[in-house]
Length: 193
Image (tube, rainbow, N blue to C red; front, side, top):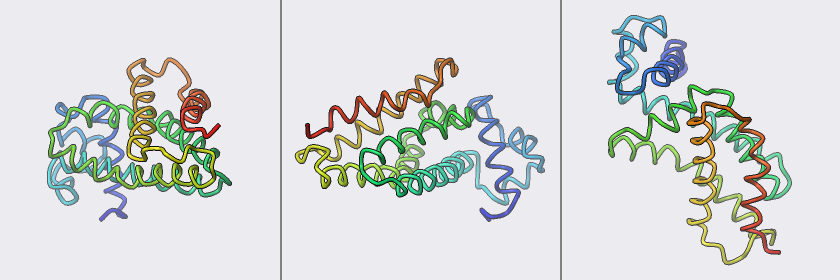
């Protein structure tokens, strides 16, 4: 199903419709119209509107994580990997402002069951962050006694809040330019020196 063109059309349309109207005001019919498909076609791919939102996040985050993992694996050390992760996190969301609105605002307004599904989708990304931290500890560029879950939370939380602020300020500044400053702030706190 996921490789069928209409699935991708619907996912892409859902991102735009949800970003422009908010999740609660985004009827399936609006998504279908934006995707250029009949309302009934949506139900060939998705159970309901909630399933569309989870699928949007799963699909887009899957691509997001894949691209970040590939890019950081091209880097030589944990410091470079962390900077690349931050840059890519910011650049991917700044390149798709509709997706940034959906991930930073609309997903937060969902119910607890939906948030649990979203947290499951995020786990592979958190594992990528863990791997970078552990590599930094092994390379002795990050402190050996770091609390890994806390550091992961601090890194992800910093990136997440920085993007949320950018969305709330209606993109009035270059998000990607913030990467070097965020990296310096994080590495100063993690650094062995």
